[in-house]
Image 1 (cartoon, rainbow, N blue to C red):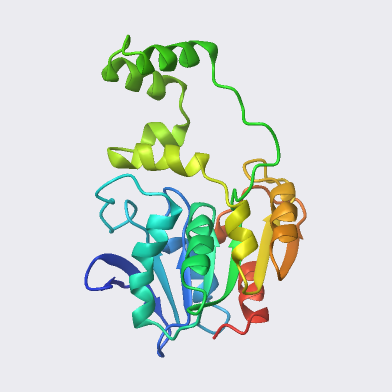
Image 2: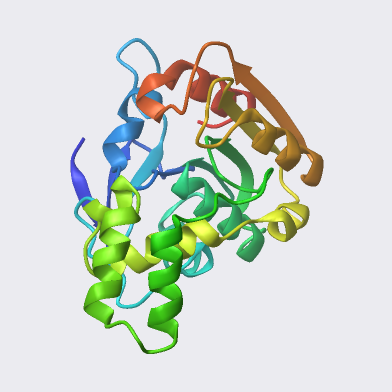
Amino acid sequence: MVLRALAGGTIFGSVTGTATPGVLALHGWARSHKDFDATLAPADGATLDAVALDLPGFGATPAPPEVWGAAEYAAFVAGVLDEMAAPVVVLGHSFGGKVAVALAVQRPEAVRALVLTGVPLVATKAPVQPARAFALTRRAHRLGLVSDARMEAARQRYGSADYRAAEGVMRQILVKSVGEHYDAELARVTCPVELVWGDHDTASPPAVAERAAELLSSARLTVLPGVGHMTPLEAPRELRAALDRLGAR
């Protein structure tokens, strides 16, 4: 796929098909537009008229100028809709699914349906408590007893692999994203939603999808047996089937 500059050169993405795009694909954390190649342009099927973005901070698109949450990402991505055949179907994986939900809330007239997969949308259990040493360091930092450098060293030691791999503002964006949940936003989504989940997903268990389906006004949940926390590369046929059910072209 050939990358193109979109929304006045502010964001990059691949464009498939020959007509004005009607599908917008948003990838997960630390991923890129390439995750959607097999879904949008399969070797054995029809190519969709679609845009798959590199979200800010990933792939070819520069990082945001400050700490953004899903709402700020959605407001930024909305600039691409002016170049598409709105209302569009938005396909979102993991972090990109959070942005997709925020976009559907902010621009309901421009989003006619969602396909979400492996998105940590709601909390279904109590959060994991941090290691005692990290908790004590964080408390001391808040009291001004520990330097920023020492606090960051603790975050690096006790944080996730995603946190250690992130750089600059993206570290704090990750922290903000992990703490965001979307119960209220899901209740405001009015368009049809297809939820495609792996039944062995431990990062975002099926219970998350089930709870999301309860909050949504129109949802269909498809659980894939024997599948864990997948990327779109691992379930292109199932995601394409969901897009086809929604009439994506």
